[in-house]
Length: 384
View 1 (spheres, rainbow, N blue to C red):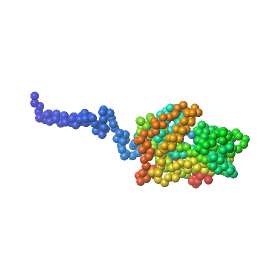
View 2 (tube, rainbow, N blue to C red):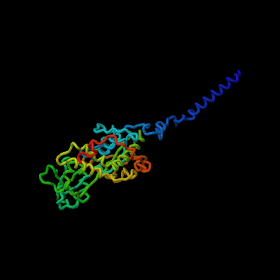
View 3 (cartoon, rainbow, N blue to C red):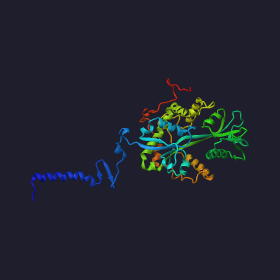
View 4 (cartoon, one colour):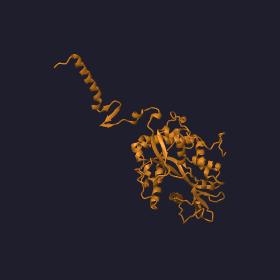
């Protein structure tokens, strides 16, 4: 049966239209959204719009935890202050939640320090960055002491702090072994507070407020810095790799903010330590302490963001292995981490090494969200 020409034309048009609509599906594609092997491979940039304003992009929540105490404002604390008081995380499409106490390390996405303890407690992840000096331990002597070098402490007493952690003792042993001195045989170790006699040498972290006051007039004959390593969880690394890249970028921006806004960061820390003030530890001394702590960071005096260095060096891992072996020997950790498996893959290591371009980076894009409370109405610090 022949159809009228008019109806026949309509059928041809309808068939052609269906063909053009359905052909991309049969060929394995959708307009604007690639499908490969039956799986939607739409990239996040296609969903959010590559190159679109930051506010249009997906904000990824990350949970961060800093080992340490607020009474010792080390690098993890001042980075926390920078993240909390600026828009650096937000401008990198992240929303940070700082978790103070954790019941399960598996709940954390990003860990500052506590590498050995965290992995021993079941944290699954990778070491990704080195942020520079986290703590510094010193052997210090009174200003009138004849001791000038480390080997000269043979036969002397070393005073240690009341709260003395296994890592503290490991670092002291390491220092003694370097000059072939044996504890108890060549030197006597005592608790400096409990002892009636003042020690010849003091061994302590000079970053604590107590030690800082005590060591004001002491002369340092040996120092050992510990670097702060940052770890990311496998959960974040595998399921949100863009968040990891964004966080690496945020770390660099935060350290550059420290270098270019020294006074702000120093006073933010001093403000938090203000309740600790005593007759000896006055606010000016707290400010001096926090300035000294910030100065320990290797990125403190950079002039451009391209100079920021957060790479993990072979020496960092070598020292971590030695510390792990010691803690395992004395029973403070149950197992030594597999260091080959906890180092970040090349794609993230390359991101850590990548320099942010000075030409394209706009430092004015970083905004201070929380104003200083330590300044009075004249803009001067109230303890100046």
